[in-house]
Length: 349
Image (cartoon, rainbow, N blue to C red; front, side, top):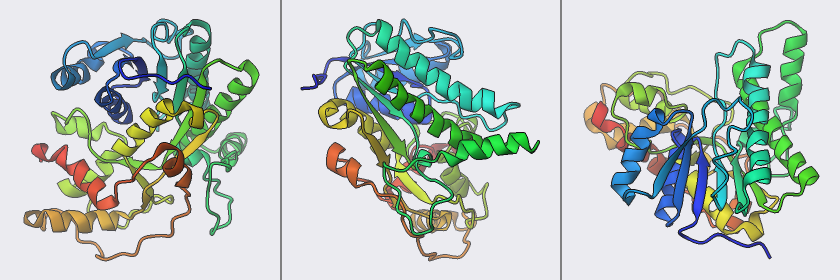
């Protein structure tokens, strides 16, 4: 029987200043845990700490300064007094000079660094959940009607990166990011098989993440630094006037559902140990986002692009039934997700 953690336990959340990490910290705090959030510098985490101190009271959220994640033992001290770990931090770099080294190898090494620290120094650690991505299952060579499940792997992404390198082409930054997620997750499961740690391990595979930004941004620059939510915001602000944009994988999930999945994976470790979980609410188009925003904010008709209203939703090729069954996730729909995103930033526009 896997021993589960109880409310009041200490949970380490890496990357707690990031878009997903802050929401993961929030859901653990809401559920009654004490959260230790990592940040490269304490100064970078001050805004998040102030927000959580105000919301939950002093002492519930602590900051652990890791310094550069590249250095050996960056997490050694962080894992010492915690009962569970949510490893959310991962490199998202789209302008790397050397994507293999700066994106793929860094994603793998920083994940293994955390797991090895937990193995060596995390005497109280019972469960680890790692944020991966749905792109680590979405093999671009699959048949158009193929429905992706947790049995699928996108090993072809790294093969494509190596081919681009060998042919002297520039390595596509998004392909490098996809490969980093797949290769880091492959490394996690090798670690589990080889090291047989006493703690449970599960992985969370979100599709494109939208929804509220925490803490609510104080400046437009903070919104623009956000990796995915800004895609929706730019239609509200009028910065993007083209709702026909297509990401190729038009599947979304609300950031609060992603965060809750991390909590549930740790609380239900007897079910989640050794498991991957695709998180996907359904499909969307940016045209639908524009339609929703124009309806919700009629006074911004001259700001929000009209595009071609009433676009049909693409077919959904991702099966999320395992996350519903094991983790009890009740997914928020796209309209709620779009409006959540804007509610957190509209004071700035």
